[in-house]
Amino acid sequence: MRHSAAAIALMICLASARTFAAQAGPATPSAPGTPPVAAPVPTTPPPADSPAAASAAALRHAKRTACLKEAKEKKLLGAERTAYVKTCVDGP
Image (cartoon, rainbow, N blue to C red):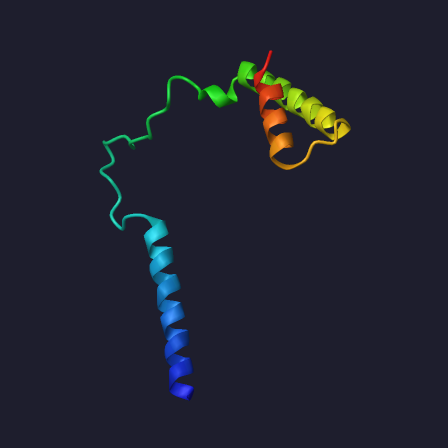
């Protein structure tokens, strides 16, 4: 029993040392004359981060909330409620 606990502790230490070495990077640095290679920067931001997309999402959320309130007032449940909310949100 003692040997297995020691073996487990040794395995954990070796695994953490291997992980640390992998995160540290290569052991040999690049030549001093070569510039470091940077990751390419996207030229256009993703559409989800744009103010127009955020505004549209906010409007859709507000409309969905209003539709849910209407469904509650009409006392709709289950599939009827789901269908009502979908048509209400997708409508004009």
